[in-house]
Image 1: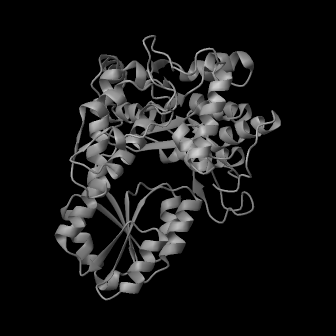
Image 2: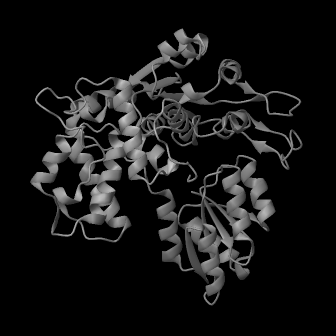
Image 3: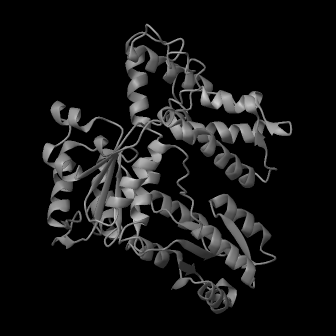
Length: 437
């Protein structure tokens, strides 16, 4: 556990540091928010930031969000700093720790920060077969390409490969190529020097450097534009990157795992993905089956999510009724594991009896129910485009036309969703004004 303490903590730095070190943590110190940001932008591995509540917590967290630096932040202060504690939580701090520090409380926060939140839960033979191959190739240095539909858990499998590799003790860094605007993705990957462009107020280490010695996950790599693909190919081949505004290449030692929900061979044929990059990434290919094709996982995962969200919401654990289990098994899960997780989260919150029954299990697409032919009952005779359009518009309707929420449920990027809605509008469908994100 790498811990960064920001500020004086009212003279309690020494006590907090000793407690953290006794719990297995490594401690760094920063006397101000600006110094802390410089440390974090430099690419130093930090998993938890403890910040003095009297400092500008909002500036720290908003700056981290703007730079897309993901780290857990907790605020610390004397017990009577009630208004500052509330302000810090509203600014985005995960917890507030009163000072002087309590060893058990510090230990609990460190444990929460280091707790494995990416468990790979399964019960199906097909998943077991994929994991067996993943474990076999994990110790190698080969690039791995994970393919499969959105929501099947490709990032979880990626972490499994990293955790079973020789690089497991080093950093695992993930970049969602679909979520970052094209204009920013290059600087996100390769970093930049101070003054490289307007707004570059300090050097920023890119994800390639941050993951050096460890593993870099390029999630949904098919969304990357073909110009940037050429620079990515060079970085992989030469094991060096060029920061924007930099004067010399920087050596990196980064293993690459990439994922895609598209057919990359078809993308190569269409000219939207470089063939040489495809071959470089596709040394090992692991195809993750859709959830409907690994039914042995459904109930095991459902019960895992029930436990997770019962604990998160401080609700009593409830069993699934036989009827609810049957509903889950007879559904085709177009959104895969992501949709199952959302469904079980809702069910935990909506269940009113002693168990989670059918009334609490609100399925997203009533048409995606298995029939004797294992097809969506109301989709027979329709084109794929028509079924996709209905699913997207129904999801938008159910989320009050909130694009961010709908994109998450559908397992696609906001950009893809926006393009689909624009297409439907041009085709004459009534699309309300899209003002919510």
